[in-house]
Image 1: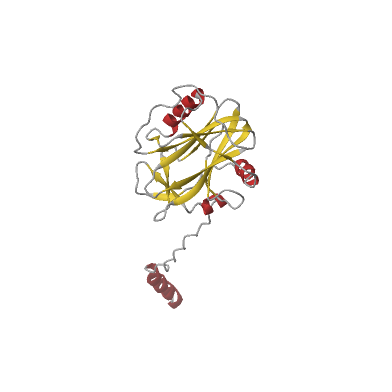
Image 2: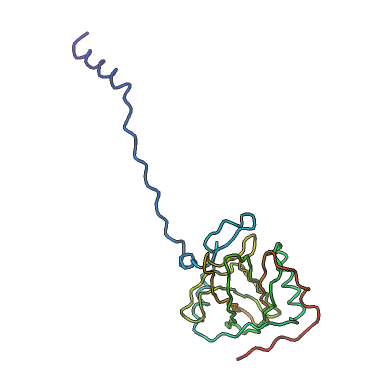
Length: 233
């Protein structure tokens, strides 16, 4: 065997046991917030019914950009108050109870039913306080003539308010904190917020109620018929 061939065989034998140098692991990318709503959601948390100690920022799977656009465009307009009513309109109150059974079956009503009669494009508001230990859902039920109702939680009223959470349903029903999750205040200090209900299409009576896990079940609403509550200008 020639000298050159021997050298080639020797080189192949030596390199056969060689392994390529290990590759460096790539760093995982840092993901930016999926939307402006997600980046603002820093004062609320959602709690899973099954894992009550696991908290996560409030985000919406499929927020409606058109609902957000119309709502934010009207934040500068005066809002009506959501007024407590002991005798809400019977048919709409029964529908509200039915919606609660489907959206928040493990929760009971907490506090009064609030109501407002809204024209298309109008909204009504209610200031709320959420503690870190709360586990609540908000449901709005539109009555006859209401085609599309929206529900928003904002940091404050007026143009300076930012959206913390919103419903993603369509039609005369709006829910925040339903379908297996509930809303809690921020850890430590809690959260002061404004609950906004807006009629995007149609007009008529809207009922809003808070539901909480562990709340005592009050008597059924709508036991006696009543006219729509009066609202201020």
